[in-house]
Image (cartoon, rainbow, N blue to C red):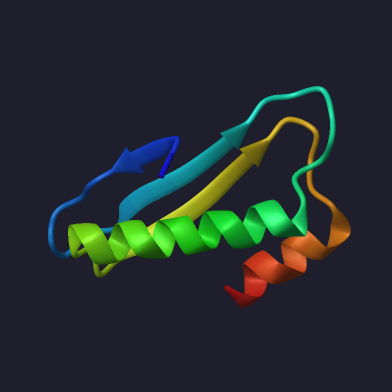
Length: 73
C-alpha cells in the first residue's frame, strides 16, 4: 500500500494523511477518491490512529462527484 504523506501526531492531536497527484491529465476521479479513503482507513487501523485529517492535492483538479464524496466521508 502506498500513502504519499503520513504525519503521525500525538495521541490527542490529528495526524495527516495525504495523496498528491501532480500530472497533466486526467482529473482526480471518484474511483481514486474511494481507493484513497479506503487506504487511509486501513492505515489508521494498522497504526492505531484515532484522529486524522485526510487531504488530496490534484494539480488538474477533481471530477465533480469527488467533492461530494469527500464531504460525505
